Image 1 (tube, rainbow, N blue to C red):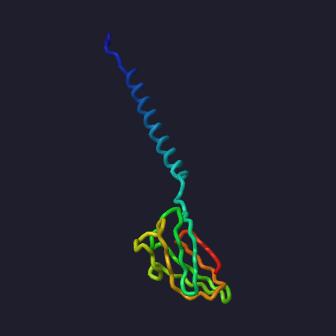
Image 2 (image 1 turned 90 degrees about the horizontal axis):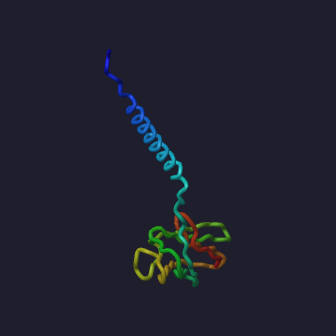
Image 3 (image 1 turned 30 degrees about the vertical axis):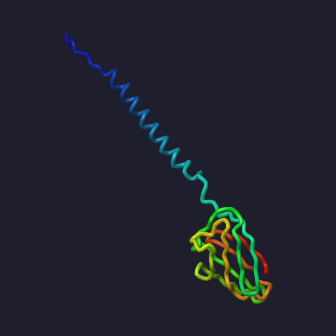
Length: 134
């Protein structure tokens, strides 16, 4: 008689646990990749601005909200009479105090001749912060 016995009972439980662990890892990976697109995107800058103008300049006063880097700001002047649009970058206006950010308490002045009837906008690449008609 052969007294040797096969000890295969322990192998099936180890294999079962390995399969369950692999399944859990795969499900976690699938859930994390499918939930990744549910994260909120970048929000737009929110700034409270007061605008004051004279015949030769426009000044924007930062009254609250987010700060915006000077290089991201644009001043857009749209002439209602002939529908021309002129865009000015950071090199065309003065930021006081002289920093690289339009922040609470600072003001931005752009010198340009305005005859009346123009729409003046302070904008970033992503949104319009302030838009007023002169």
